[in-house]
Length: 239
Image (cartoon, rainbow, N blue to C red; front, side, top):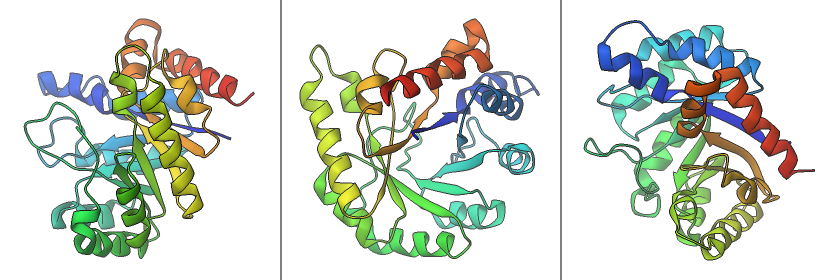
């Protein structure tokens, strides 16, 4: 089965624009679960631009599916994850000036720091994945640091103009290598209702994490329906 993780960060983005209580990303997450989400993903950024610690605490209490916490590899965030105890954690690069995560984590260049963080969280029973570009060097480093899995950055595929065959082949080759090395394979970034099928058809993929396109669709049709539509595409991809 191909799992769908729904990222509700941008529900919190709308809330934080007014610094009030609505819309509530936790309520959006519960609706996403009703629509068929297999997990909820949130990115607790160091600048707290959208998701807040309290959101993660409430998700841990109320979500019926797994909670996946995206986070930077910093001492503060590792300590927070140890306290918050999400089911999964995904280490991502983070820069204050970016609109969203741009590019994958350079695991190869920071193996020592990342290995220590992976060991600390996995010692707490938290599965750890690494958000990386679909490159052989990064996948090999992911195995070396002991991660449970990798989330392949699909942004180059999603943003390619015209024929995306080359970019899709890069993702496919990376997924195949990661699986051969014993890593669970996830995908995410830029996936939407129009481009998701080729990635969802890759046999090594076990999870896709999708946020912006689902939240944007939810503005028009509601969160439950938006998730149902995406889930239907993932089911179609595996038929």
